[in-house]
Length: 352
Length: 106
Image 1 (tube, rainbow over the protein chains, first blue to last red):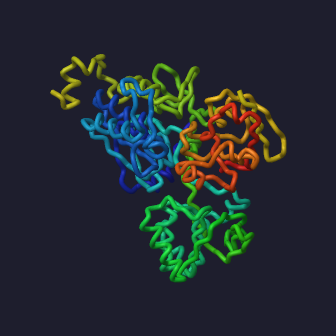
Image 2: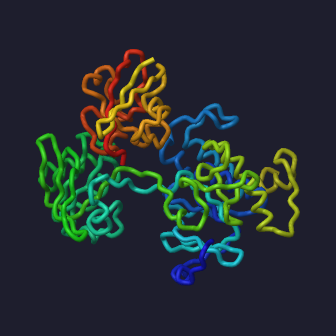
Image 3: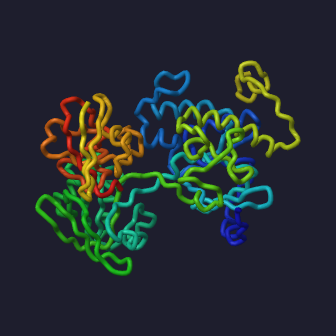
């Protein structure tokens, strides 16, 4: 059962969007759901934790080829994303990127959804197309790291002031690591960048800038890995690192590890839905969850015979839309039509 | 066919048979070798199939390509002999290969 929670309602008083459907996840299946719903006159709001659309296709394998999309012998993750965006353009969805739905509560026959940025939706239907869950920063498997998170160890920088006059250790070799090294160095008491090799994925000009700071004695570059964090009550005192010269102790009170993203189910687990091994069981007629009006499509759902293929998610989106229509327009009869021949569908698509 | 030995952090071993042409990651997944997660399914996009190749087999398995090196930045406790085993193709020449599974895949 989903709980009604008035506190949540009050907390989310800023900017309320009333809508027919909120799609959680802007991966290929979430994007195609916009299309199928759009054909049935249902306009979508789409929320995704990433700062871009495409989900895993865009984040994990933008340049890798996919060979099993019907009609496209080979397409890369990014191309597929771009094509889907082109295909759904006529339905002008609203994207809310870089936000995660943290709260979902039922309010009568609608749902209130609140994002981590405090935006709220009041919607008739929810479509969970969250794939492998939300992308979250990888936590280095260092003993006791949890105790320092949010006080001394941060995976992103929300307020630069938290880092002012601190002894900062940035770990990693990509753009995030280099950008924050350069941005925080001027306000830090000391800045150390630690990377496992003397070779960086980050943009060459940032690497060059970093090397200049090192050469001028304004920061340190260490090649190696973190082995232990030491401190009390969430306050970091020192960090042990291993370099080719052996173990070393650094006086550090802020660590920013950048080891990429991993997928975690996240808040979906708290929404009162039936879950089986982190997947959401659905029926195979409507792809509805244990809660009426909440659907789950794509990699996140489970039913007998489920295959985690993009093409299966597309099919699921089409069937979901039929049932969503009945909820959103209970008095309208739905006439099954083909885009090839239906002038009303073609009008919606803007091709007529 | 090649026999591949996976050694767990606790020292236990598992020998699996792998057909030439598949990857060491696929051989591990087919035989339910613990500790090989392969979250991305073999796209060299996640670094959760990290292994340490036995030093004796380092030459036979070769060095990681640039893309794999980049992805190894996302693995934990990376060493000289670190590889992402989705990027090691099984050949008959790898019969007897020994790899160690790290304590954690992140």
